[in-house]
Length: 304
Image (cartoon, rainbow, N blue to C red; front, side, top):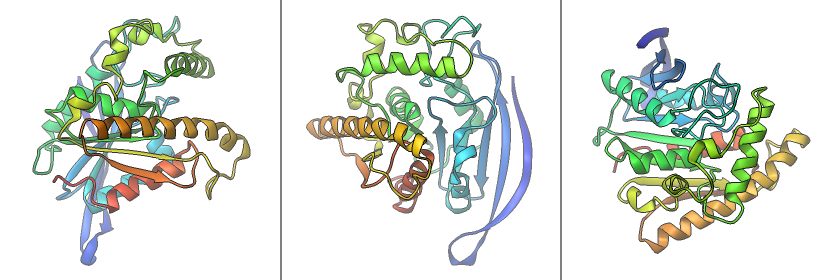
């Protein structure tokens, strides 16, 4: 069952030329797909030219999206871009799993199915804006690769795909082992026991790993607006937490390497993409927030 609940009737912001813009914040609940119902938060501005679905990172919670906890990207709704933030998806890679992720979760993740349902709900409320009538999708880390992969397999509904610090070349040496370790760690940290990567896409040689590897699916994205972003892992203005920054440095260095592989593969296939490589930054929300605003301010979210 889909239920729309209005949280905030309207707010006022200011756009270019001093014009007032009304922005509404909604929360609707999406069920089905064999998973517990979860909320989706949405910020909508009158007359906006695009709607973007923002996917969370590996340690997504069931209360609010990390985008809502950690960033101000909802403010894009005041100046052209509606923002949609699905809640949940802990260590899910926003994909349909083969089996339950672990013994303490009694259902199979089916996030591809859930995203399809979210888009149908957005359609019903006239959110497929712009000349294309399609959506943008973006994500960070785990959600970055998921955004590209979902776009590749759903190009009839997605026109823009944006990965920030994503792991987007799963065939690279060590990546499948790294994902196995990351899933186990995320499940343990959440008190749910280790998640099993084989339950997601099967053993490392299964074809589903290829089908969910953004580099391997590049040709399916031909003609879309594709953007990838990463920083270098060098500490910058937001690295005030030494422990968190130290953890984020190697993750971002790996993401930068992955971005380079994806960019090279796109160039070899003649597929144009937009890149955003920041000189400073680690694997954390402040830098991802800046990446979104640079994309917004450059006009990337607009249809061609």
